[in-house]
Image (tube, rainbow over all chains, first blue to last red; front, side, top):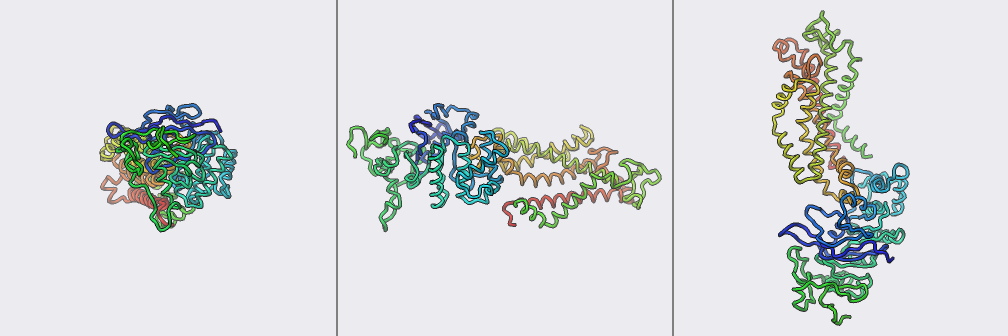
Length: 329
Length: 280
């Protein structure tokens, strides 16, 4: 539990060039231990996906650029990897499942062949052994009748089944890290629960660490050990999942928590955070949340970017409210 | 199961089914030519020069006394062979360049598409005649001329398909599984472009037959004594043959007509059968 397999230090990613340059991920640092599930939450456009794509080396290289910082995976800096080195890592040591199970499978091939693909590339399995392995993996993700599914096309399967197939594919080479980019957003609630349960079970069984991206707080509560809240490309709060729900500090996190339907009194309109995320090109110069913040209290909020303050063991908040020496709790 | 659906849809189109049967007959006749006719390809029957169709010579004989029926059978080998080989050449060039163009984009795409535009600007017959006149008439030259001038359509189709498919999530997923660009093109992109390419290839075969006939008719394609439907037709260049010796050119004309028509029907049938948006 103590081994850090992924450690990101001061990572910044930008899009565009010259005048049009925007910083999508700004000075993000976190460390990720083996066997843990880390949730990354935030609204659309806050840099969640950019962050994960830069870990996978899948950023569109013509328009985006890793400005500085390092992504240490087992001690190797992924930000300096070549395409060839990435091909070895992807699917083999770090793999990813996507949001849309309906479109993440190639419609013209049978399921069996698609799951076999990473095994062929990374593990050099062929023929009978390959087929047996694929069926074993399908069974591991609780697909009923795996022999039949092996010979089915994606359109024969439901959304939940396809997402299981995607998970099977991602886990086929037993990666050390699984990046799940909103894996349950496109599924209905009962299927969502099954998929989350499956991920949790695989996390327990094979000790795959999971980086879980979502904007659904109830999903976070269900599966994650630790949580990182992103806003406008910056980390605003970082703590474990119990702290988040019992003792959240950052006004943005509190806003998110208050926006959940079950926190709302019946008959009253659902609470929400005022305004929208400003576009990356006109972020406020101080705290990025300052123009929507209900607790903005001083000029500093608008002029200086708050660093992450340690307010407790493993609980960091980027808000001037919690500046050193201030009394909180 | 999918194959059955496609087959059922194809057979539902009566014209396509008939066209397909006709084509099979033509192809078999061309392949088994020596067994269907008692005469050799160039055998001369001096006693029966320019004779009318009879039981002895089904479609009569030409001005050298060669059996027209036999020459039509052997001509089918050449004509269909040229059309198919030229199509294969077109596909090789068109699919490769289309893939590269669509997948890599940027200046590579620009360069390839400008080449395509340039070639598409050439009036086909003018260029073909010039090149054929310079290179000399032969079967291989006809294949090269058709292949090198006609691949542009396939390239455009493949490029357009790839442009849209490469945005799909399953391509990104494939990348996340660790596939390299080459594997993604071969394993994921190409198979998805297959149905329009198949349809286009079918129609290209029909085009090929017509072009071969046109070039050979002008004496720039297949050279005598090798027969092809086109150079058999060229007998009709003489007024006397055109007026009085119909058996020298009508059968060849009908064969070209029927084969092109059949292939076009088959192409239409395939397009409908392979179109995922069509109802069963």
